[in-house]
Amino acid sequence: MAKRAPSSGWLSPYSVGIALFLILASLFVIQRLQSPRTDYFGTKFDQPDPAQPIRLTDHRGQPFDLAQLRGKAVLLNFGFTHCPNICPTILHQLAGIMEQLTPEEQSRVQVVFVSIDPERDTVAALRDYVPFFHESFLGLTGKPEDVADVARRYHVYSKKADDAATNPSYNVDHSTYTYLIDPAGRFAVLYDDRKLAQPGKMAGDIRQILRGN
Amino acid sequence: MPVPRRILALLLGLTAFLATPLPAEPPAVEFKNPWIRAVPPGSAATAGFLVIVNRGDAPLQLTAAKSDVSGEVKPMITTRKTVDGQDVAGMEFVDHLTIPARGKLVLEPGGDHLMFLRLGASPQPGTPVDVTVEISGQSFTIPFDVRKK
Image (cartoon, rainbow over all chains, first blue to last red; front, side, top):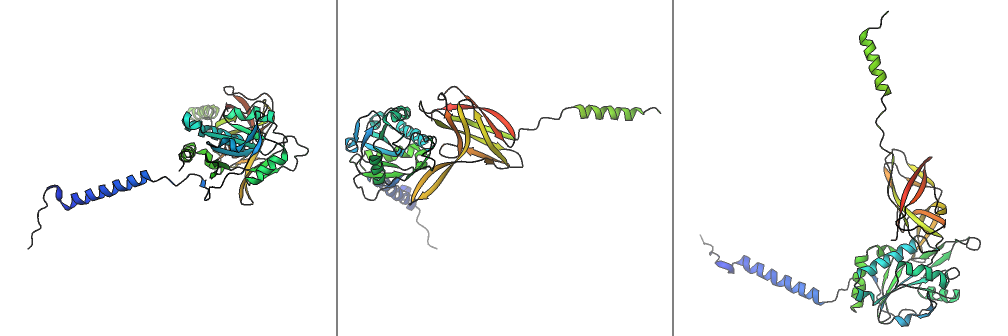
């Protein structure tokens, strides 16, 4: 009966197998570390088209042009100051996302809140409202036709309640997406408002965009 | 005819038993984590949130609420619709919110809530606000924290 050769020392088939596995696993890890992460928490735009222009007035009464923010990642959201639930939730969440970032990263991120209710959201109303959530946030308003033009370009749906003409506390139904625009001024990632509840993952996407991946 | 001592003892014991108050029932409704969102000065409205647990076998209804900080407090739902392929959020006042039997009603940011309308001075963090809620005919006054979050 043939005797199996005794396996000698560390060159046994088992050791060789383990060594091979370790080498392959290391190569896989190195490859993963070197290649950019391409998965995003939000919905990545397939085409990094230039973000639509925005020229409105900010909450300090200064003219605002989105092109001024080239070099920064921009989180852009649309809402109205009389919105008691969804908009403050989103703005508090955006503040929480900023807090996940280092001061250096924060200096390269700008949150912009565009009012879709310019009739009530004057510069003065936005001045009281927007910095309450975070001192760095910018609020924008303007002539109703200019705001409507921006909303159309960003595919924002909004509809005032039927009693808007008679009820000064009227509600506005509106879409609740947040755009992430990259430092080159291109559409990068889109989030529905439920995603904003996860600040760590949001911050991960922002870091990735800041790195230019 | 003299009452036999045994029967007398039994009657006395029964009287004592009936006179003893029953142990208190655990409350059928429990309130967890009640809070109101602090809002910027001048805001006309804010929202309040809490979880209401119903330990009973019948569903309950939250029908009304009031507080000193606002002209009105109303139950409100958040609606989610798809319009032209977009998620659209809206709000609607409702007559009541249901707390299911042996279940709970969760009022949370971005969802259903108590709407505080015609706010007076803005509620400040650190100063709780008493809110009275009407649940199926019973009133409960609960202190709500004020939080900036």
